[in-house]
Length: 489
Image (cartoon, rainbow, N blue to C red; front, side):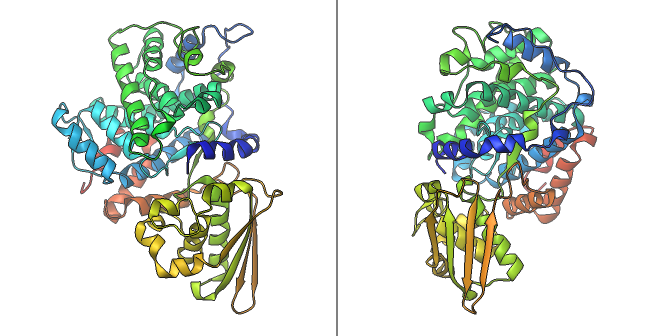
């Protein structure tokens, strides 16, 4: 889905999602919140306040629900990164960068090659965004894990760290990029920046800096060096360049932290200064979004995961179709017609009646409902070139009708399936699976993971890799996750 359009959709529905977020996931149980020493305009000391929090934040102070969301973020990231690892985009990156890579320090997920940690961070970050199937912070549409986990997973192979240290850094990195994103969204995005890249670099720098045990001064410099490396323009969408952005953010953030560890200096107000990051690349600067509630509320707790490999605007219809199919044991031959009442954005963005290639299928509510009714799924396999040309899919697709209804909100759908034996089956979706209100279950995340890695990892290897992600807190060395994700390991 074009991200400009996804932003419009999410902006209409994210506010209620934030209100509904579980309180347990956003309230710290130990350390008091950081007091923000800024003026009424909240434009002083932002970089320093954030750096102080990052350096002092302890794993023990994280609420249990936030830790759990961190493991879910890791599991989803590994699945999508392995899933994208043999896409043409990654093949070209490996071929281009292989001759110039340094020592084989870290693993490429889903492959056998080992590159230096900087190159590995880039390629794994790009791989994780190939299918646009990664995690999403709905308030900013940042895809948090790509920049952060790609950086620290590579670093964890080179410099061993415990699973607890790794998970703490992951959560702090996600927190950093999403808070900074909140401060400038949506104006920054509307200007043309790809916010996953431009804010993601801060998350990567913060997480890597935490693992490198930077001092407060060094963390200030790491954030400052990250601010000097904004990457990603929305003009890149639709090309390989889009997945380049989270990959480069991972690489740049790691680069910043490594330099800062050797006392490579930067300005101390690079986020908020008059000629700093926020003022230079956005017409909105709400610095309290960065500093308020550090240690007491967590943006990382609001991360969500796509259950379907297409634009969010279609997810309610897919959810309804799968529920009706499974509960009524529907077969394609039983379906007479399908009637949908949808928000206007659905047909505006995904109104392709006769997609010819897999990518077009992602922009077709008709195709998406058809595959959901036939397969009970809408993963990457359902959006292949073969899938959109399948005769059975086309036959069901042609029986799907969609009508715009202004009373239907963006996150809703009203679906009725009429069967050839005279039944009328109805389902209204208030919030689709994958939203903050109806999050994907752990079991659903595992099904998504297994589907993505099929054909790349064996079933026993996939199971072992999932278990390592779930049990990351107990690992003596978090780099084991990366090594277990190597093809044939």
